Image (cartoon, rainbow over all chains, first blue to last red; front, side):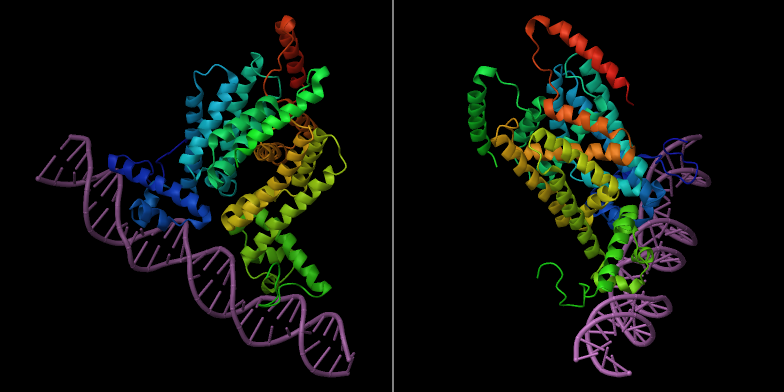
Length: 228
Length: 228
DNA sequence: ACAGAAGGTGAATGCTGATTCATGTTTCAC
DNA sequence: GTGAAACATGAATCAGCATTCACCTTCTGT
């Protein structure tokens, strides 16, 4: 009942040839769906790109939507697994955040269709869309909660923190990975600066307050002008 | 050349009746596009919902896409204007952030199609999609930069901060306004807690470090359990 | 009260593209 | 080597719209 039950029609390939065809089709689908959107993509174009005949698509997928959903799930689990790998063995939790952010940007750069495919999923198959973010958020929340328990992070609501951090990564990636490839190191540093210390001005030592504030401001503003 | 040049055909309504019709059509379009997506929505359904005949749509819009783009632009400027209003007169910058977040959630709650319409725009008309976020980000960045200049906020790259904050708001709204309406006050408080102070544990007074950490942890975890 | 403009109507046109199917080709277990 | 199961093929089917158009109704100024 779960994944590919070959009960109705034959969907899971049996031979090596079949596996190859299915994979070619899926890869082509990732490209075309990402390029044109779900509705805009035609099975014909996917097949052309995969080097298969029109009918072959239906040997492996019951319909257009099924292929799409599989793509969303697959992108989700590939992303989660890459993030887990990128982060494993890192002790300091802030370094985990940095590595995770970096890995996300890398993934997005390698799968420029990621955003478009996932976002379209909201219309094609809402459950798949939810799954994608909920699974990511669940793993993230757990990690954050543990770090908070261990005193590695300030104690916050882990789920709120997880969605906040996911949102940051999402928008930063959209802006600096997809729209305008810039100095990603600078973006990662800037993001880490923000998510580490927040927006509010740390209470300065009372006596020197004004002077210290002024100095900090000048220095950092100058360094910011180096970019952009 | 700019907005509605009635050069080819009559697109801008002249009489009050026309204005009403156009508005009814636009409202219906907001609903139907939000519900079914751009491709999934049919002009016929929009007209049915608006109580107009099929042909009337083309009295006011050159085609399906034009109506969509107008919707995206309109949602964008309505949002920006509501945010500006919600925030004007507030002095403390962190209170501005709080009020802005709250206002965004309210807007999203009142326009449950906002997310779906804006996200679809990426496929329907990429320029409209970019405009939406870029205009928001530009206004936001400017405000943040000013607050930083005035020493109200820690100095960060304003554009990175703007996209980070937009991403947070976007994801928190998706999760707690659209998916599961929960205790929004708690979400706003949690988000403010995060964006104010960041993730990292503030350096404790050396002598009491361990004890203090423990205590904080117990208290806050207990209070967190009150929710969810 | 009438002309002409603005607004309204919905059947008809045309195109696009998902899905099916009858038929050919390849693979592989034996 | 052979036959059944797997795969592959692409023309044909079919349904769903966007858009057009020829004609009707309601205003508004004079």
